[in-house]
Length: 240
Image (cartoon, rainbow, N blue to C red; front, top):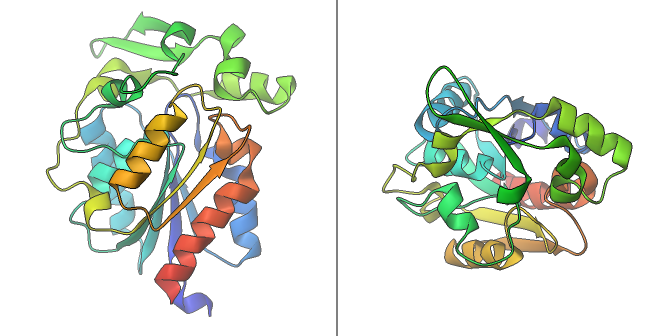
């Protein structure tokens, strides 16, 4: 029954935006689930998490909280100690321990080529902001979508600040320590090496893992069926 179903809250990561969840949202709506795709500010980890907490506070009932890429940092910080987050789903996402940053984790194992695909420029609030260069976006971020679709994603990407990527997780209670988690990731992710995905899922004691063969970092765009399947596993666990 729908009244027992949680709300699915989706958090995009760096170099993406909330419409990157469109294929997943369509499939979740087909299951009569309520969905909120949050516009992640990508300014700082504490600030982004505080904004997400504000969104969560306005939702009644249980939540399945889903993060992609850097969005995994945000959900791990925001959901710790929260009341209504019943499950976490990490989609090609970071699942940090206290003090770990996205930048630190991405270099824990070999395989990430993101650094050489970035352009950087200063922002008036201080520090630098990063974006993926248009000429590198298709290969680096979304190799398994069409060139035209990758060009659209590149043009609409939301840059992220350096401080957001280099800040360690503040909380001493990462959400995955107390909240059941599911992981879905690709074996050809060029941003976050698959070895790291496996490590984080194992460390979190994931209730379910799904490794998608031949997929890119943009898993919610290129493989929405796989992402939706992992979210539904979490939804069914919460609803039951």
